Image 1: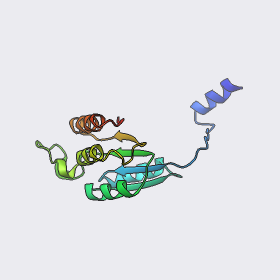
Image 2 (image 1 turned 90 degrees about the vertical axis):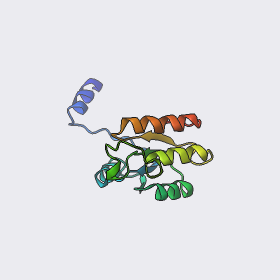
Image 3 (image 1 turned 90 degrees about the horizontal axis):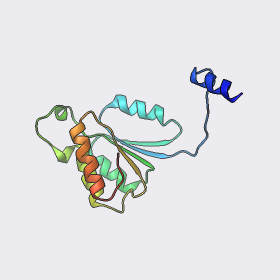
Length: 134
């Protein structure tokens, strides 16, 4: 029976429903399409969304999150920019979290961005401060 259930699940004919407790998710991203995707992906969970550095710092200072998702490029002018603008990107939050080791200590941090160089800088900054980040 397990083989049949496995096959039917792969075909999408049987849905597996795993019950779990809701988690608290933080998203830093300026793209409203991603806001919608994360909201649907984490339906039933608690999700807080910031689209700029100041709002992110406020929310991360006041709340507690199980998972933190950070985007690098937060403004259209950052896309394909030849220079960095660290004060207004997700990198500023990576630095800020690194310099505030007591905040969000148990959170899983994931960097999601199309900017591979920016992502690597953020992950390196977080890891240098002793945090686990991917």
